[in-house]
Length: 264
Image (cartoon, rainbow, N blue to C red):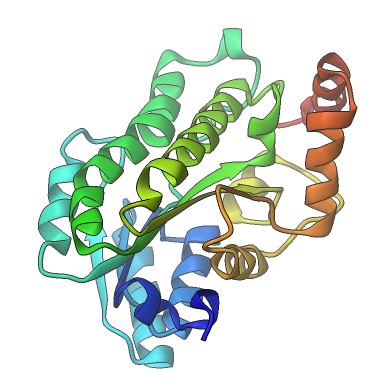
């Protein structure tokens, strides 16, 4: 049997951790993993939403689900996560948590900018530093860092968010090479827009090629082992080629800016 055809628990281990799991894409990842037989550690700030998801997944898929109510911007979160999974065969780490500062950069409150950096940049660094050593010692595992098409070029009006996603893409690409010899697969998922609660709060219209969170999660998990970068969806892949390779950089940024100028 080819490695990618094996069930996820056999390939990586019985447990998966999803950071940023309370709703949207994080909840979709949790549901996809549960449907494939993975036990789950779900991490987010909103305990009520985690409890609802826990009840749903344990009922529908008969898997064990543990919930951790933690703020991924907190410097102490890494220690809490390491303690929570110390007795588990942790096979998959999905860092989906993200914070977006919307609007002109010069007008953004300082605390918003700092939170983008804390959640989107420092957060994955802390989580991976805490959890990767044990995964490498076991000699198997997988890491998904959620990035975005917006991180492939400058994206006006969500500039700091886009820059943080570029950071995650480059980090994943480097780790993909570093960790291969330890049996750990790494991929950056450069997703396009999805109609998640966070998207709905900031944008007022759909865009071509939008995938549902469930479809994006499914395609990402199906793509494990094909890293270091994955763009789910044909239209999204075409967009990535157009803005990243075919258009001059300034044209790509102007094109994106026309589409993001109405964010709120």
